[in-house]
Image 1 (spheres, one colour):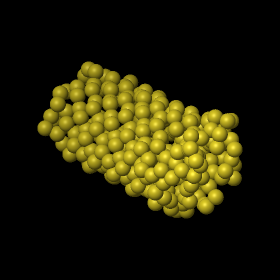
Image 2 (cartoon, one colour; image 1 turned 180 degrees about the vertical axis):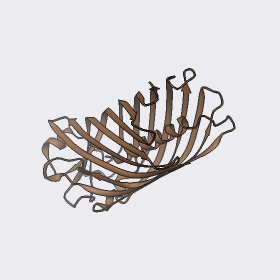
Image 3 (tube, helix red, strand yellow; image 1 turned 30 degrees about the vertical axis):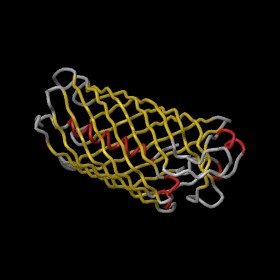
Image 4 (cartoon, helix red, strand yellow; image 1 turned 90 degrees about the horizontal axis):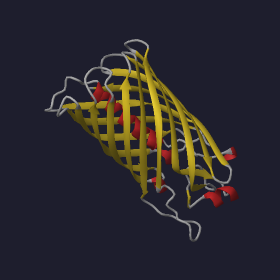
Length: 297
């Protein structure tokens, strides 16, 4: 099941890494960075459910980052930013989200030249508030990536990540079972690649696996109840649905295309397909798409 907050955080980290890589002329004294993304997304399963409980929706989204980049040596870099994100859903307004946080990225390049490998370590923290307050949380994401550009048109990378969400509200509905459904943690890894068809057109692909807590919103169901370790009432999708926290393994396959309009702006489109396997034979499937305009300076 897709976690929109995780994807937004990953997008911000990727954007900041790209800014750092695209700025070889910056000096140790530091330079200001700015990025703005605005667009729309579609998710075929915002409820993270199956069968008749599956809900789809569209949303307008916005993400902005203002930060500072410095290169203390020819091989090392540091990027710090303040981040803001906002999602507004067309149908299920309880998913509307405002997130404020910060990101720190340390980068190191092993050698000189275009093809020298690079490593990045990043930490991102955010405060996320939803229209439905049972979903409110503080989030931390730690990640590490190794990337290499093989020539002027092709690059590839591998990475690992850990994410932790701290739920702000606890509303148990079953005695002896926690109501902090959005108190989550997970870890995983990914491989990615990108190919520049021309100076303006770029294609990318990514395969990721995450193991950890997931949330499914559905009606009362015995299989889901047995597999869950937290349950809470949630009116986001209707009065008869509940949030369930349970362990799962999610495979995500994604593709992106980016067209540079100018040196500072681009049009971007992405598609992801996700499948999740959970205990008690529970399987979930979703796909999503995102179109956005990005400006960086």
